[in-house]
Image (cartoon, rainbow, N blue to C red):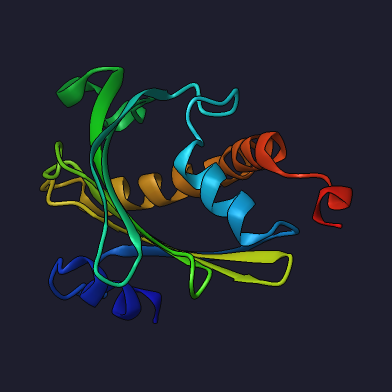
Amino acid sequence: MLATVLLPLFSIGPLLLHPMVQLLSTTQAYDVDFATASTAYLNRYPNPYAKHVLSSDTIETYVDDLGRLRTTRLVVKTGALPDFIKPFLGDKLNSWILEKSIIDPKSKKVWTYSANVDHRRFVKIEEYVNYDTTDENTTLQVQVRFSSNFIGFKKRIEQWSRDKFHLNLGNSREGFMYVMNKFQRPRWAYE
């Protein structure tokens, strides 16, 4: 499982795959090399498909003893809330997302972990992404965990969050492709 691979890399403790939370897994494939995919990951905001992203700030970046680039970023996103929760939290909600990544040029892999650091009683969303490049093809394996402690609305919030995340995957993919196209070198440049 992807979460098992990522946990030792980020030292975030065990991911409890409790049956009472919503999970989402998806795979995306792109015809791009490692340099393009990893550069696009680091530069994916702003893009016209991510208007919900208000800011993205790098908190820390360094190269570890194994030659891997490690980054920590804070991303602020906004989004509309479901009707059933508006009486408690309003129409829109800004959320602070902590994002950690490891980029390994030797293995041509990127591992990312992101989670909201606020509104965790309402919903906690943890996303794990593994970028794996072979030749000119990069595959993203995405796993997302949705958990809520909002008494009386737990199941509805988790299901709504999962459905909304799934619905937004198309925009996420389009935005990533948009950024990759900006950084992709033409094939003739390799010759």
